[in-house]
Length: 128
Image 1 (cartoon, helix red, strand yellow):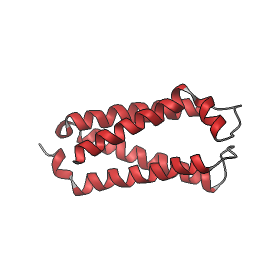
Image 2: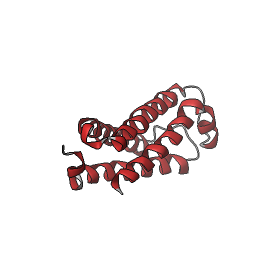
Image 3: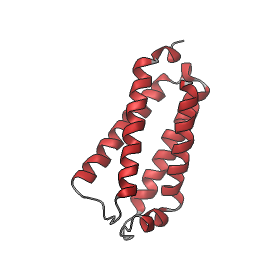
């Protein structure tokens, strides 16, 4: 069950990451954000796709070999989430439609909390 949930988060991360990576203008349009500097969206999309998708896919495939990777994924997820919250709190987004931004933040909070939960509660799946 836990491994399947990591696979589900991995696939969700791929979809979300690919939107940022391949179609940042689409995200800017649906949030009514300025398109003058959306290169950061591609960077975030690459990070989400690479780390969360590929990383969690590797953890799903072989959790006993990938504890350190899972720890890095969890820490990075927490740091990215804190960054999102900070940016939202200080109104650093140019988006006029913030509902999707808020959904992104809530999703990131959920994923981060869940990863910490798995790391603590189900540590045994990583034991050799």
